[in-house]
Image (tube, rainbow, N blue to C red; front, side, top):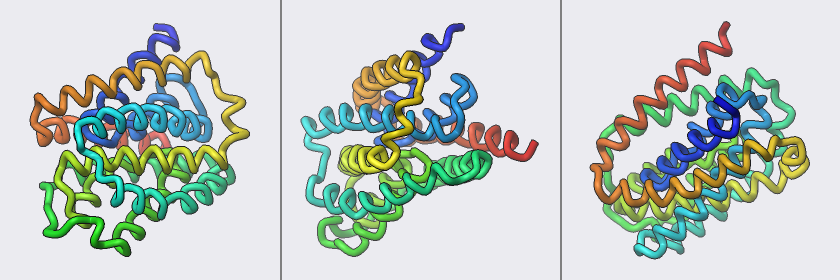
Length: 248
């Protein structure tokens, strides 16, 4: 199977994940780029930021039309992560490849565990907790810059449990955070984009964007709990394979 076809298939899966769950696309994109399409870990994290940033912006538009975005809370959350995302993005290029892979495996495993855990709700709206929003946003920004992940798989639980948003609002608002963090990280990684294989990255982005619309429709038809458990199972497998690759 050609690299372009594989990129198209992987992009569709990433888009559906982002559109349906508000996160998780990058934790699929990076392994797909490394193990299926042959990218180095550094190139994969940069390409992932391009893919997830474009897809998140598309999914954000769809959720905004449905009234699922809390702009004030999301803007505060995202603003706190811009500088950490940029700083971590600059540091990522100096880390050994196996360190990036191991760190990514750990994050993917954590994401899976968080998705298996039962959702908790808070009592108050996130806009009333600026300190908590800023702290969580800064942490997610650093994660985005370092590993090329949008952080939606952590942003959604944080927006629900720490900031008190309902599930649909958390999904929509997380896409605003992901879009901002991805853009900030790309600013510091700009020179590395020149060496990417755009014949693979471009079709990946195209089907991811289209898949985000399908994911939004899927989320309206299928239980969010079912989607999360399926996705979490896939993430555990990905994390185990990446960790095995580092250790062998």
